[in-house]
Image 1: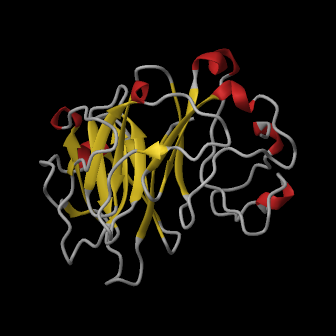
Image 2: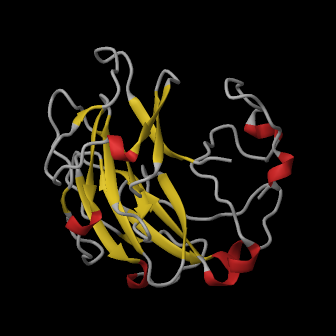
Length: 244
């Protein structure tokens, strides 16, 4: 854990400080997610972890009150697995998982029992051999699911087209993979007036209004949102844009 004011401010194009100068982590560790904590809500919130191989774990946020400078164990993995995303949730919230090959599964967090920090977790989604989880988001207060491919194609689909399913199933098709699109790079739940940032492997960023992304059915590929220079670049992340 770290106080926000302890992170040095920098310009938009600056590289920033090495994370090792801020928190003590091993050289082979990578940061997966940063969570902003609201102390007033802490007793009512849970941390949800999702892994590449489709495991999910819910743990009470209260178990993370006293974090040592060297960190504490938050989740354990099966061999070859790794952490994809982490979210703060409250009771009865809905979450949606999206995979690299365009599958999705929406379920209620109350289907998960609370586990300890040392637990591995349970199956969130059944994956095909060549598939893996790439995105995980909250359905709450959102209207659309935007899905963006590696080659810069994307679309948004109304979340009303997705129904709550049982955790552990195969899910439903949410994106049509084609040669021109590449695999799914990321997905984000949005409101109609949101703006998003598309971030590429070569550190290029473009800002797009949600209303400017085509609204299409689940099993479609979408339209070109960012040119990735004939395969030389690729989309790696999507972030919501917030005005100060």
